[in-house]
Length: 218
Ligand code: DC
Image (cartoon, rainbow, N blue to C red; front, side):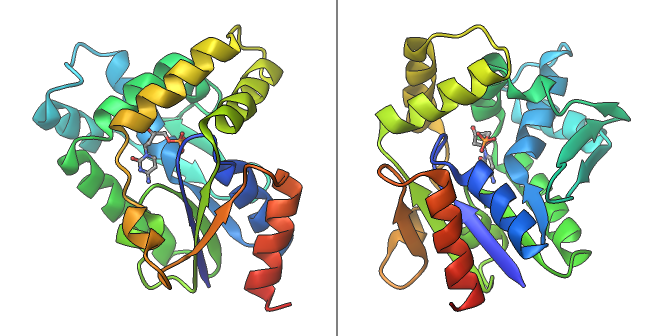
């Protein structure tokens, strides 16, 4: 069974997807981590992030390994675990830049489908999972929330991780990313295409309850 969860930064989709996968005992695929891992690696090279061909060529040469265990999603590049390093605000900003390149997207989409083909049941999360990558998924969800709530969630996550940021910087980063991130889930907002949940007023635990009840048909 395939469950997709798409939506903007800070909508709660990563936490909801991970917890839903754990509850259902499904694998968990964090596709944002794949884009982030490439951005982190490019940033450590001399390649210009705006140069799509060079970024693609570089990305094709990287060995991305992603552990889809529901409780311990980890990602490594060429054998180095980058699971924590990819979460900084600087990497978030750089990731938006490289995720705009269609050729990079096509490369990662193929990789995501390949990973999916090895998994029996999984929850996959990103921006285009229900619309582009797995349009025939059994359940397709879109999560959204107000900018203020999304910024506050990201701020709490980042400070809990020990990152030195202010809520203003996090909110500005979210607004900036909203303006340039591909909004590939938008076709799913058409009536009947996906189940859309506004998480502004619901806790993540409440969202997970709702998603799991729908998937389990309760
Ligand atoms: O979900 P996230 O914040 O980890 O995503 C990081 C970046 O990657 C964000 O700028 C959007 C991009 N992304 C994407 O374009 N498509 C995906 N399937 C997943 C993430």
